[in-house]
Length: 117
Length: 109
Image (cartoon, rainbow over all chains, first blue to last red; front, side, top):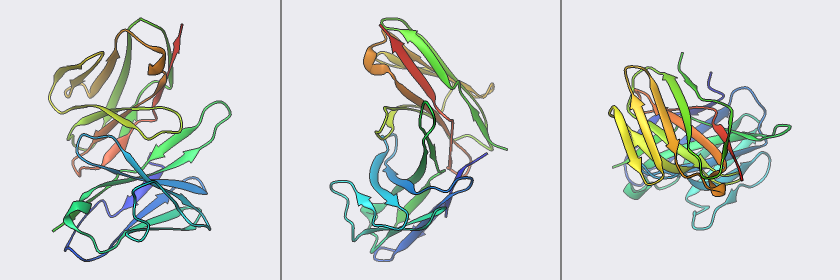
């Protein structure tokens, strides 16, 4: 079954409003979670690394003040798109990482489709 | 429940051909994706199939049979740089992505 959930699964909002997306690790306490965005039929673009109890690490070109990330607990990270505009419409996917003995595994959430009118 | 199955690991030889299978059981179907992911990097989009049949893109091809809930990714003329994890993901009726656990492909000289 799913090990990472996201809420909401889809959201439509007006331009200028803020939208919060939740990402939950269902079976594992994740100190690190990742946020991606994806445009249709394109690769996932890493936006930021969410660190529990500390500030997120943003990728180059991603506006920290626009995409607010909070990782207040080991099972929940939130991404808030502030003052959303139509160009922010995208598919947002979170993931968590699990280190294994021989190989690491990344578990992806089902995604949140954001449409900004 | 919803489920995506793909082999955990495969090994192949440089220059050869390898087929990575993916079977799925989901509530509805709005397409199947294949991604390539190198360690420490974000997944790279490889293909999207929504209709039955084979789609070829250079050395990579992807096949879909909706009636069988089955897809495969075919990699030809394998190169060492093809060593990576290959993720199969299905978009269900709610346009949510259901992810497979990934297949780690090891290429040997």
